[in-house]
Image 1: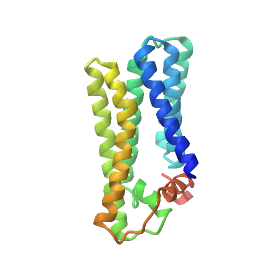
Image 2: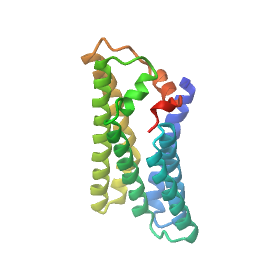
Image 3: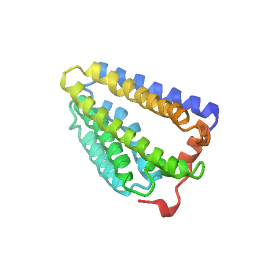
Amino acid sequence: MSAWSLGLAVVGVLAYALVSHGLLTQAADAPWAAGVLLAPPVLALAAFAWRTRRRALLALVAPAAAALGAALARGDLATVGLVVLLQHAGILAALGTAFAASVRDEDSLIGRLAARVHPLTPAMRAWTRRVTQAWALYFFALAALSVAVYATGSLARWSLLANFGTPLGAAALFLGEHRLRYRLHPEFERASLRDVLRAWRRPPACGTAR
């Protein structure tokens, strides 16, 4: 991925966050708003499940997306707030489950991703396992926080958490782990963000599918 592509991706995420926040604060009672808000994250989760060969996760996403589409077509969604809460907390919980489940494998989810960049030593494999656990905890904690903030009754406050707090928290965890990794383990091979993105886009070997 080039610098231009990365920049466009960042702009796209920011634009989606701004549009989502605007819809939730200005058009929360419009059923069509649910389609605009839910389509991008649902497609992103489906792409994640497809690339990581998580068949169980993909099997959950497909019928959920179909049910949502049918409900939108019938106009059954009178209020978008509860629906986007279920989408946000549900995707986070699904990601947490996928990361946590992979810890039981020989190589964790992040370990398999790292192995596409360079060979893993036992120390690297142990580190990627702990990082995978940290990401799982992050997803589960944020899912719980999402429900708690929504329960306070402030959709605007929840929207700030979902649309801005979630990506900023993920970016902080990603960059923090990157810095901590080389501080605690200077022997680790250096991997650029471009290397990581290339590894993410490269399909895994069939032998690693789960």
